Image (cartoon, rainbow, N blue to C red; front, side, top):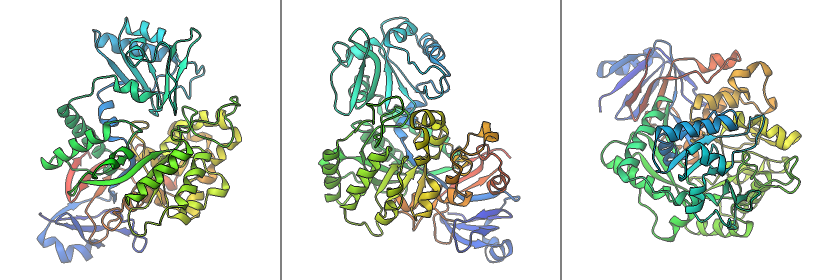
Length: 531
């Protein structure tokens, strides 16, 4: 592969021993040399092309350590309901979508949230039916994918309408008439979603190509593809990605997680530069947005609600043991403080994994003081999503009150020695890593910076937030020896940016508007933006 020298920039290497450089050389997809312009150019420029960075900031390729790739790819082809500001606007969006896609065919949508609505009442199935203009199967998932609103026909075809069944780890809400209201929670979503026809293989492949190309425009060069509980998307996604890799069309490094069901037979063989096997995904509880995260204390105003166990504690202990017996690292969804405590107790009973991919706690949104230091002691990575903080501000204040001090404890975890791996949980949240960096550094929405940081003691410096988007996820995936830093011998994954994140952070400015000018994976340019 032809070599390349990048010179004349501000290169943040991510290497604590030499964090800054002005030039780097790439050969055969790897970093060959890093240093000052003259130091690199005198030795190497005569044998390589040279790109003048014109002072722009360069950082290692950015990871998304928690992204639902199949869901993201397919959601981009569905009805987007994000940003609906009230119940009526949500219904208006559904009505417009039904008119734009006439007929009786199924409708799927995603992205709504009522967290910041003044009136948080949700539409029922009757209102949804009227918006659809008739009897039509439709399902509209909340932004966190932990609840959804369904039409009468969708409920009927899933056997949920009359009478709604009891489902362990989930619920079908009942209306005043004793029938399903239209709101479906957690594990009850599985059979409902399965009642809709799945997309074909070619559609999945093309949707993935489009989604991965879009992620390149955001500087994302690698991701950890997470699974949903009891959903069939994992094998569908892996098969499509393997096909793309064989065709030479996969240019993003994907670490693909498994479900417990995948352990019933031989493990999938994922070989190649861009597709690797990850962790086994398990689930403890629900989500904060749906008020189903499992808490030690009830949510404010709901004295009987401490959240839901998606997997009951005994079952989760069996799942831990089963995955560990296969030698697999665990990636466990836990959001509420009681769920986090249970998982840490279970991790304590597992063998340490040494230099292999460590166990991970996904989200870890709520941590009581007694548990803060346990992740580092156990060698468990905190895989967190800073953008959720921006989404949760009002809801957390109203649902938890003073207990919000326990949420998103980035600085406390770092000070305890925990490895942080940041991601987005897309399509649950915006996958833009610069929005995530903004959330971690400023802890406030970009459009209301004048209000000051939310729980400011948990802000972290930009370089630590960048590590959580680069070397942290690489370490969490067992690839810290190859990815995450711009040092000799590492894979040449990097991003050239149109704005200086460090200067903006120092001056308290927004970070979310920065964008890549160039995204490089394995020494190849996969995205080139405007100047």
